[in-house]
Structures are given as structure tokens and as C-alpha cells.
Image (cartoon, rainbow, N blue to C red; front, side, top):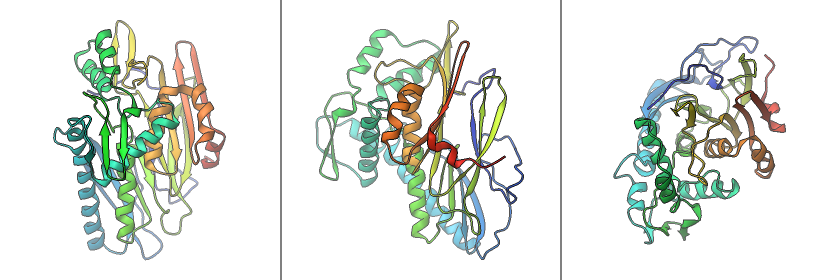
Length: 354
């Protein structure tokens, strides 16, 4: 399903532990890279990784000893598995898909699913529907198109759009949800990794661990910084209009960063490129190439708004972003003979001198 570009202008985010802030070793891997080193306090750095939720997950945290760290890591990955069984649209018997099979009924759901749905609808409202959790039917059409390399038919798109509207989700109390139309398909892919990362930090905190980094395949959420450090140091990469790769170090603590764009997943038919990013309002895949990086208060926000701003583009993001607390964005748009680059005013405060 992953198709590779012949020419790369897309940005990357890599998590890197810098022992000496005067230097930055650059190693190319598709997931986060961390430098191995010893903490100068009683806490020791531990690192674990696993393939879950369709991505490579890397976990870094500081603990007192190996036995404790191993036990906590098992609890973390068990929690991620639990979330996947509730939130996945790929697993036929996930709690999410079971809900979709019971339209027009008040359905009691788990706290995890209720919270994920509620936060998704909140982002949908604030983005004016640029992100829409009910876009599952449209997303599946374009997912199939990338496999078959055949564009969806107009009538298929129109039919799918009939059930795409986040306002067709009704919350009843604190544990019940009702889908107001038949054939609705919810898709939490836009916030799933960020939501899971936030939950991982809660698991770690419950075990007394607060200095941690969670890398969900490139979307990174961090807690307190490493012992004796002021922040986590990450490397943010993007390509300018000359095609030159620019590396910019940024600092984060108790925040998250997520990137959305069409580096690998796209469809090209008759010379026209169709992104895997779909506009929930039109049902069409985006034609322009865009990369959005969002820094937010938590992983759910970073993940969700990176998806929303990818649809909104620079001009509409400018209108909305100041209305949302704790959110900053960096966007690159590229069209034939046109390269646009923009970032919100607060984005620069995360920069470190190279």
C-alpha cells in the first residue's frame, strides 16, 4: 500500500537524545533515532520497541532498574493492544466497528472509545469539518483505489458523502453514543496514534515514571525531560523551494509533535497525483502536495490537527489556529511552479540554534 516518491521534498521528524547540544548526529531511519547514553542521576534510560497499531512504536523512559522498566514496558504495550481492540477500524470485531453496526441505537461504550469519539468530534467542530471522524466510507474508497490504481466513481463518492457528517454522532450522558444514520463508518486513524501516546504517558505516570518519550511511527509525544536536561531535543527536517533539506533542532517537554503528508501513500492516474489525504466535504483526495507539522499540548491534538490542517491548507489554517490554545504549525505546500512555506508565530519558540 506504500508507494514511494521519485523526488522527495517532504519533511521528517526524528527524536534524538543529544548528550552535547553542540552536535547533532543524523542517521536515516524511518522511525525515531535515539542516542545511547547514561543519565547523570540515579535514573537509567531504557528503550523498547514493538510493531503495533500498524506502525513501529518506540518507547524511551527513565527508571530505577531493569526489572521495573521491563515490567512497565509490558504494561504499556498491553495497554496499546487494548486500545487497538477498541479503536481500530481494521479489526472487524473492534468496539468501534461493532458500534458502526448498530445505527440509530443508544450504545453503551467503553471510556476509551467515548473519550476518543468526543475528542474527535471536538476537533471536527473546531476545524469546520476539515477533520471528520465519520469520513470512513470516503477513506475506504480511496484506500481501495490506491490498491487497484482505479479512481473511485463519482456516484460512489456521492453515495459515501451521504453519511459523512460528524454532527450525526450523538453523545448520551458519559457512556452512550448513538449514530444517527445507517451505513456510517467511523475512522479514528486521524487521532489514533496520538491518543494512544497520551494513554501511554498515563500508564507510565501511574508507575511513577514521568520522564518519557513515545514515538508512534514518527508522531512523538513527550513527558518530562530526561534527568538533568531541560527538554527533549528533536530534529525537524523539511525541504525548501530549492529542494535542499533543512534540519532544524527543536525542544519539547510535556508536548507532542505530529506530521501529516503524502510522502508514501498516494495514487497517480493519467499523470495526476491523488494523495491519501481526503477532503471529507468533497470526498476527493487532495491533488496538491502538502506537509503539515503540528506541535500541541498532547498527542491527540497534534495528530488530529495535523490531519485537519492538511485539508485546510495554509490560508484556512491561518484563520483558525489562533483560536485553538496550545497549537502551533509549520506547513509546506507545493504545486507546479509554486512553493509556499508558513509557520505560526509561536512555532519559532521551539527552535534551537543549529
